[in-house]
Image 1 (tube, rainbow, N blue to C red):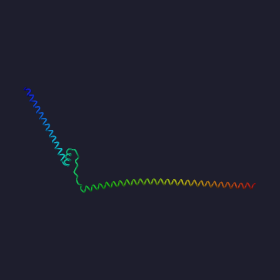
Image 2: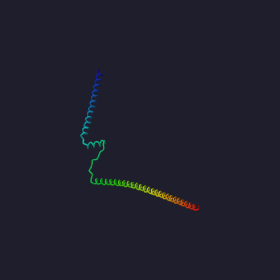
Image 3: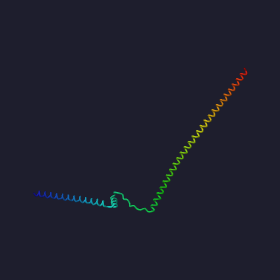
Length: 165
């Protein structure tokens, strides 16, 4: 019986320790849930700046510096830089336009030179044709003169032959 009592005592102690462990575990879980709830509530209620700082502390996001008003010297410097950039862009555009115009002029000069060359060739061909026509006319005239001389000689020969008879 003593053994049974001891066993019962041990079982009761084991049960109590289990109950205590389970209640401790439940208490810790409920505390964790409460803490999570508080954190979520605090996060929901915090301001944007606080959120940004918290993220920066956690390393989650980038921290952007507060905007500051530019002084007049900053504005003037920015305007100077902008005018220099705009001037450089205008100069580059002007340079490109002048290069394009030069290319167009060169093309026009080349085309004009080709037209002049073609015109000179055509003039030379025309002159050659005229010379050939003149030569042909001279040959025809010479042939006509030769034919007339032959006819005159035949007429003279016939007259001489009729006089001899």
